[in-house]
Length: 132
Image (cartoon, rainbow, N blue to C red; front, side, top):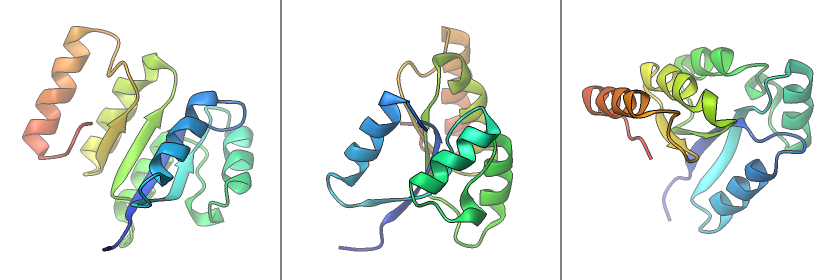
């Protein structure tokens, strides 16, 4: 098999059931490697979660904005980000990463309303960024 897909995750840290589900699912076919994350909206919890998950210190972020900015500038940047946050955060996080050229894997629902969904789909089409 070829190179693994470098995956980042936003949300899904300590005590978040859905984050664990997505990490298990990403290992089923051994095609993904979780290499970066901003695992909580609480900075301390985010860093603790990343450490527990074995994320290297330089890719363990306090918030999704920092993660999108820094990952987009890395030569070995993530290929995709899994968004496993509360529903109301899906849209702003997806837009942030899409604007940085990073593909999106978003938990359902995609967004809070049809307008936000249409905006995400349009941005995906305009930027040629996958929105899954």
